[in-house]
Image (cartoon, rainbow over all chains, first blue to last red; front, side, top):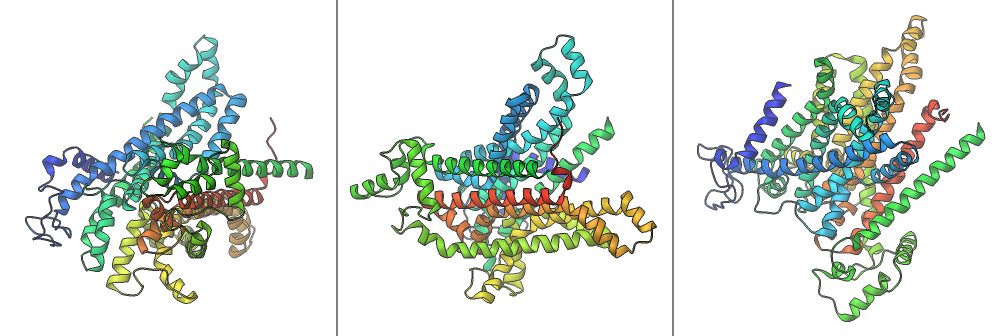
Length: 262
Length: 318
């Protein structure tokens, strides 16, 4: 548990303080030192164009973590709004929203992101928005189910009788009770968003060279594997796995931990 | 009872059809989402002669009202006519044909691995416990969170380059050669689904093993084998098939990544190429196919779920 937090904190700090932490310029090509192994100057070695791998992995944390962050901001924001409103209003509106969510489920996130790139062009913007939309129903469905159950509890009726308006009850009372669930869902979605966005960059549709992004680095390092230099692709891959496993582990522990604390 | 079953069946079928219609409409309408005219989107990055422009107008029925355009497109697609590729001037269906078999083989191969290995490891982990359980849990925790392309490069590094057991690229020719070429890709595709199924199986079987009705059966002297088969497996099958079905459905998105990683010429990698080449007709065609298969697979999972769990068949009283 503590290990996970350390890993995530480590990557976050790397992303924020990259210019201070990275020993070399991540995009500086130096063809005189291609594919070196670890050395004192290049702690993780260099890639096939002589760029320092450690610096690239540190800088890569930026796009690899910022993208998923925006995805969950969109998905959690939209999902919460839809789920809470629908659960409160109830009736045919709620049923309609549920059906609408069902339709949105039929688009796997990755395909929606690829389609968005086809229409709007490469880069991080289109896939991030598309994934935000694709993940919204997953969050909305869980929150909606919990919100509906909350709404039936006696305290809600008591508050209504006291004259509190619907939106106020939802905001001040129901939502805080769902906080652990929301955080857990957002955390798990962050992990999936990381994987999907890295895949988009790997496919060449997301972050473009010469930027350092873990998914992109894996793709660029793949030819080097055949030449016997797997590190260029494996180090960013390792970073991805470490981050995603840590986030997933944390996400699954949020609810049990908050329940034991409360 | 029979009447309520047929009503819910009809309602279910209606929902699937509506989902198919809405999704196909969204795939179709994507062309009109971007700023600029549809012709501009279709021809961006290509030089097209005036005759070519006119052909595009005809192909996409740009002179007809919007809804009719959608209908023409969908009905043509149902007949296998997806129009022409702007890159190669060939009919899209002829370009897709050979690739469908490759992708289908890959998906079925991966699905097989997911279900067989996932359930096996989950059951053994739950029943045996001990070090096997610990190791499996460690592997599945990592497996669930690992992107398929990272698995792909690890597999390539270890098994293809270092050990030389498997070829590095390509789809192979002939049945046996194909299966050999597709083994590493199938594993890469299957890893996260396998991890999920394994975890769910382990949890479900463990719960069943500890449940009262199983304890009762054992205390009554029913042989352990029979208990496992009749009680544990039957009840555990419900969440397991749901997760297995969902994992297989998500393979459909994953093929794009894995096929690209292994240089396999299938629908997935072709989709990515078409996006890179701005070959919109191909992008729409493959998207439609993949989304339709995804919806139908999910619908099948729902049906199996209903069949396995009698509790779901009776509609809840209001």
